[in-house]
Amino acid sequence: MNISQASTSKLSAKRKLNFFEEESDTPATEGSTVDYESSPYKISSHSKTTSDGSTSQEEFIKQKINLVATLAKVKNKPRSYIGVPKDLYFLIDLIKKHTNISEQNIILCLMRIKLNRTFSQLADDFDLSVTKASSLFFNKMPRIVEVLSPFIQQFPTKSIKQNLPIAFRHKFNKVTCIIDCLEIEIQKPKRAMYQALTWSEYKKTNTIKYLIACTPDGVVSFVSKGYAGRISDVNIVENSKFLDSLPPNACILADRGFKNIAHYLSLKGFTLMRPPSVSSGCKLSKAEARLTKQIASLRIHVERVIRRVREFGMLDLCITTACALINLQDSLIK
Image 1: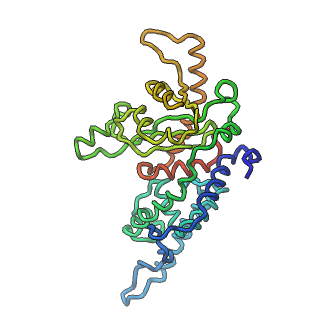
Image 2: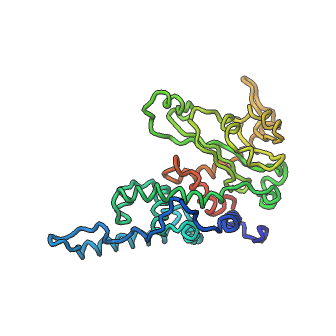
């Protein structure tokens, strides 16, 4: 697929789908967690029985209608229920093709991530026991993550420039990516040491922190593993594999919080572009104030990306899947 021929609104999704098809056209690996048996969604699997041991026909019909209604709701509004745009619903078929996981199981896993449904709620939606719903999620999710991971990747500099938004094309045409950190509130750990490590002074609660990078046109190109909330933004950049994902001589756009890493990046051959620092008691010059405003207007794209990520109710275990799915949603740049 020629990227330059794609429409602006679906450019990011098509780039990603093209990459996915090239890299992932292989069968599920032997020994993986994939269940190759038939779907567990047998309506009568745990239906109520009458006194003589026969399955209640009324209960059977009720369960079947409930499952059909659940699947119909998802297909009608897939972005609301599983984070996938309606015109890209065929992604479910692609996941099914590369994992041998049934459509119902895929939807169950994605609903858990998007809506943060409890296993009790999922059990009701899909006519399963709570134990079965939980088992399906934890067994199938790693394979789904594996299949969706190629949707998050660093594009070549040429591709980034071809899709550079107009606002970047004058003074900021060398920008390769925009970075920011996402903090997710977590339950307070029981152990005092973990409470201290996850405490975020900024959020005033216990958190997990992730580094997220996106291209100027709003495609997530990197997401780090989770770090305890106490870690600084600079340390995440240093300790994650973010710099390894960048092309040579990359230019990174960031906010003032990353100022202490400028020298470190320069030693690695990268450039950091950020708003001018403000000394205590001093005011910015007109030129500095103008530059600060310009950078802020461009950094809004990564903030919009993070806003979309936060639409997913369960992130602490599945942020990679969330980022992959938002890469398939409509473009951030209209």
